[in-house]
Image (cartoon, rainbow, N blue to C red):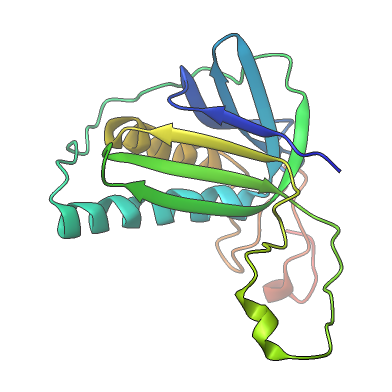
Length: 190
């Protein structure tokens, strides 16, 4: 089966965004460049972790390689909605991050969720030297960003994640506009 690698090195725009009302939002990573538009769906927790790990990657790149990082600016960057049409290319199963020292860029790779069943091999353990990755035949989105563009992505991703339903002050679960059954109130509607 053939797979596609959607590479944007660098993209004109790379953002996290949502479609739908709070509580029913679908999260997307969207890259635009060279007349192409690619949108991949993922979970809210994946967007949150991506922002967190990108921040850690930038800090580590500065510490280990002396990369000049842009200051945290209070200026709000790209706040525009996702470009349309938002057609899901695939659902993200794995996210990979790397820092390319030669070009001083961050590489983000979103790999499609696979339906590959684990293979059980019996025999010699010397076969582990093979370079077969379990997800090498899956579609992927690869984006290369400067540290400045990465910081802008992080800030927008955090805004998108925090723009959802407010948490219940008692249990922390999201509050729907109609309220929710709060376990701290023994199941009474709050």
